[in-house]
Image (cartoon, rainbow, N blue to C red; front, top):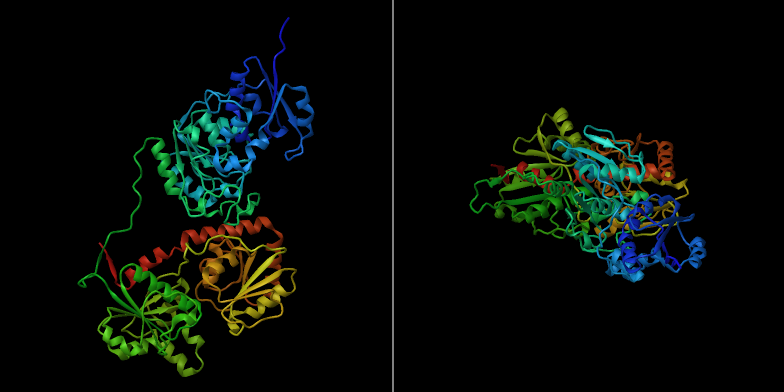
Length: 639
């Protein structure tokens, strides 16, 4: 009498990578029960893949991705053995400590001869000058920033490669050397296209499992997940791991940066993924393809100007210590020059020796103006309309600069002070340094002076996306003191007041307005980051900004979209519809429409947030600005 084959039901609901990695479980079951027949139960969307697994005899499907799954409960009665790998693989003890394949094998009670995935596909003929790039992962915390993918693609094309873009969503990306297959292929078709490439790059997603199964060299970009776990069984495969450790990783199922795995607008915002640079990934690819690594561009070598020990003594003179963006920039200059080995001091023209009123950190000594001549500084930097005249009275034998951060004459109280401020720009003893292209042009056109441009930066170690404050409805952030008319805070109150939103305000003063739900008065910078990151937009309605305000730059760095009045300073870094929405000065109705539009259009918010973040990461580095500052002040010279 013919013996009936043992019937086994295996349930794994998806996704593609998870189903492929059940292959070793199936292999172990076949080895343990050689005459068995295995039926694979999965969601109908993934039905094509189990048919390509070597040990699967039949495929059944379920209709719903999330439980309950009555199909499994009904079918299991008909089988000798039923194994639910969906639930087994998702149990947190396994995710925290085990490789997922190990966890599923443990639940199934098998030890396969090999833990490597297999698939009934042949690798396509390989084009040695073609590289595949998987653009995103299934969860937001696994996604590499799109700007990094674009930069990596540009570098690979420069290296003579074609780049095949893969993703399940159509990405409108056409460029030289790019083959865009996003949203245009089934997943299995994408796998076949990948197999024809010399290598594949991507985040922790399905594609690298298929690369391992088909012996395609791969670079996997891992952030929140412990890299030792998913790659445990791939050590003999030709691969590289791009993993830049930061203190909060790995965080697995509970990202501590506030990233919500299902939120598309959070894709590419995880600090761990942002910290992995395109240059690093490109070097790994070249190693896989056994090319000589491209030399990493280095800054030009420098030598100190002749000055004994090479250290320069630098003094910044401020009119006063107050809580303003200008003082913040001065303190950043001082702190960063000090960290580079210079002896830096600060003096306040009003004689104050307590910088704490500014609410910003200062890491250098404060001296009295009366003590400055005795310091014998090498460089003095004046920073306000009255300070150049004070510096000249000291009659110092040193280099003197005037840091111009605004159109000072327009902020004077009387005609005499205005004329004196205008005259300060024309003092021949002072070299000019300014913070914006607009001011650079203004000084040339109105005062005939050339100047060095040293734009402001943002501290990327402080300002990055970190949404932590929960909200029940849309949240608008207003910044600035209402006591300074040209800051336009009253306009912002009017704009937000007629909208169904929660209104937060950042201010150096504690004056309250009835339309404000929460007032933050001089919070520390860590809290400021969380405020930006937790708001849907920053509303900035200044009428006069000669340079991009620091709050706008910091908001961009925290992926907080910006709606602002269109001023020359705002245009320095803000581009309408690209990384911000700009409206005409004083157009309260237009600004209210822009805010409402941004709040109602999640796609627009995500695009502007990504554009702002890309602007911040590519243009706001303080280290690059201080390089220019050192050269402008003559503290270093190019070799």
